[in-house]
Length: 539
Image (tube, one colour):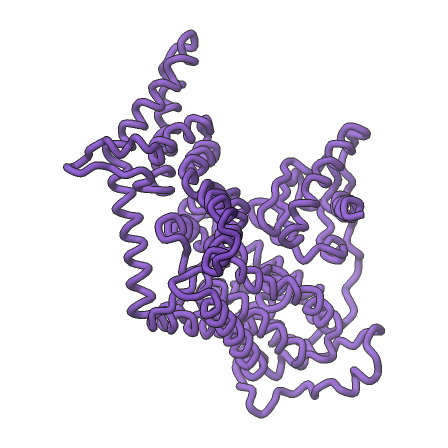
């Protein structure tokens, strides 16, 4: 039954992205089906967003369909199978895009569909701005670590269960085995990083893994560098990344100069030898110092400026996502998990999603007559609570503008709450990266009891919800915004709902201020938008 459901969702998506002939690549991450498309104009965005099970769409270097954690891993194989079947059965040209309806649109109130379109415009403009060498490099770094997230999550949960059983004194015959299961991947994570790095930078993946394996080989402890012996794992994932990148360039040099007759013998030997020696006598030491500095810096930051650091990180995380700079945090998280057993930064950053949830509740209550937007919020709210924030961000707060800013205020408050406890010595961390919201509870770890960690993290979520709600309810709308947005009464809303609707004027305590970029304020319903979209609020 579940397999039929996943196949049905894949079958509904495929024709709306232009059919198999329009699909060039198919991959998935934690929450999104990422498609390479031959012709972007063949995609029917609005119809795709209306498919049950599709939480939203995001356009970046690939076309990304948000399906949620768990679901995307089951739908992707079905989608790939359908693509292959369609190509084998009828390799016909892709269908032509549906032409737009001629004529000027009739005046109408702003709907959720229009907000989604504005969100897509903002996303497209941001994509163009983000195509810089630095951000493209950070994206490549993210591509190295994102495939490791499922293993980090699985091993992290097993580690949490093992710790709980050990503290309770239960199942003593099983806990050593659970400890091995939880630690095995982390002990060899450098090998996987090296493999993915070489693959991402165009080298032979197995050579990248071979060079990186030197870092975790137990015998490396017999090697002395700069007057002290190395230790297995020194340099960790940063050393593995550097070693594999070096291996790629050495391999490229060999492919260019080594004769083809001996290439199969010489190239892999020289690649492993040269990059391996540089790793042992240089990279491991340097990367070890950097990794140690990252751990020490994170500890100092949270112990001495915890509340302020939490406020800044929680409030600015979503703007960092909008700018594509959040990908620089992935190696930092992984380094902290490898060296300390958890990353204390992730629970703080997760508060950004809590602010979005509180913001969405406020929008839902303030815009009682906008039935289409309220439906969007109802469908996206469960995913938002579980930490999948894209539907709320791109479908609600970001295209509205000011609510996106007030949502960030909620995230800042939640981050300050958790950061304040770090200053008191109660550090809350996560044993994996990827999950957020309520989905992070099974992965919590730190220097205190599990009950206290749950209480602190839960308190941060509640703070983010509350402040995000209050900031949006009282400061997220101007009078003009309420006039434009709070007038969509469709056939699906009853007369009682219309009677309960608020007046379209702003509340007395709502500030009268110009609308933020991307908001519909400043024009009456039905007036065509400006030719170019306004900059996103985060820029």
